[in-house]
Length: 327
Image (tube, rainbow, N blue to C red; front, side):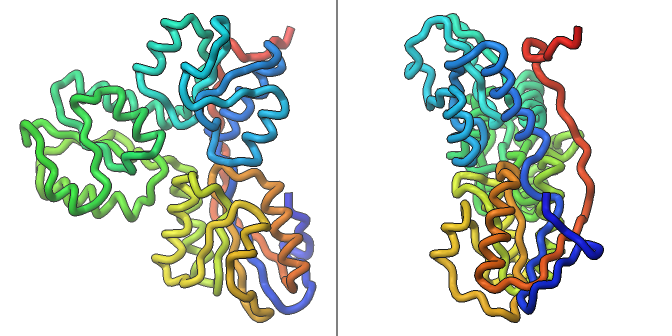
């Protein structure tokens, strides 16, 4: 954690750095990473993981060093007794069926909030609805969700697509959303869908995950006081990219997505009288934030602050097969 003194402020000089909280790991990411670590401890390597367990190179490399083997497709696995973990982003039923057919032992690390959306798709599909999935069609989460009912799901990425999408029966339409989108982005698309389909069914609870919402809200607050904002996260991380978009939509012209301190090589000059805002995506470990703060200090940062918009206490249960015995 940050070493913050004097009610959250350390005085070094002129440049001000403000770090948002909540940031970094969400409950689903923490759970997914610990599932891989527990599996390695209980069963030993190799443990196969389909797709990056979360979108962060530092995390993936660390788990690989411990014995995790990452694959994109199951046919890359030649061990008939392999133990396979599905990533936090979710997979389609076809992938699960293939794993079972090949005799693999499955460990499910899918975020429970993603599972919720999968359940909604199945529910509406069984009722004969066309399900409009608001999200990025090439994102691994959306691919897995669409796979629940490929003949019934239509992916919509924009307002223009929402206004032109065709469905067999306008009276039987539902929508769900990718969990890591910006609430502001989905709001306009959903409004367009509701105008076109007044009877459209909606999720009982917002699909955007609590952590995504909290981090976006914190970045909005950060944008009010920052001259430049750095979001620490992977280019493949949807929620990290959305944080950059949120910052820019709030008027911060210079908002950057960087993976680590090397990202400074591609940004402009930081002036000593600036206020620099920092947050991170839900797959970013705190150690990278600490490295970034150290780098900023070397570059002339002078005042460090951390503000907390909301405390997070959500915890998700682990698969029964990975629960450690207390006896």
